[in-house]
Image (tube, rainbow, N blue to C red; front, side):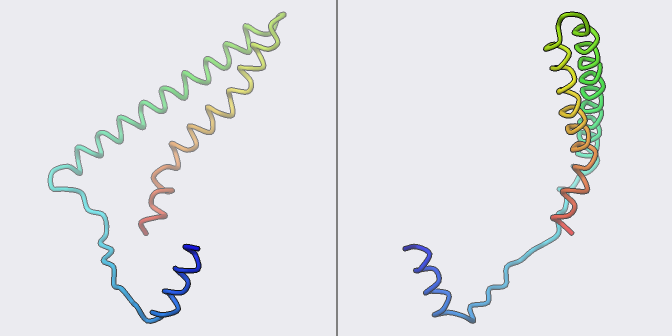
Length: 101
């Protein structure tokens, strides 16, 4: 019902051009350096968590080698999740940049 109403309105007003402003993103004065520092700390934290995650997965696989196969399998299945998180963190800025270019 709503869809037919919207289509009907769009047919009634085909030349309703609205100029929506789209300014580029701009940091507030004095915040650009502080935000860069905060983002750098976030990247550092993600890297530390990624290394710790890989160590934990390796430990689970090593401990689960003898008679604890499910523990080893949990470690092995955790590796793609850790690598996926690291990959997302590494590509976060280019991904967001696609939407603002």
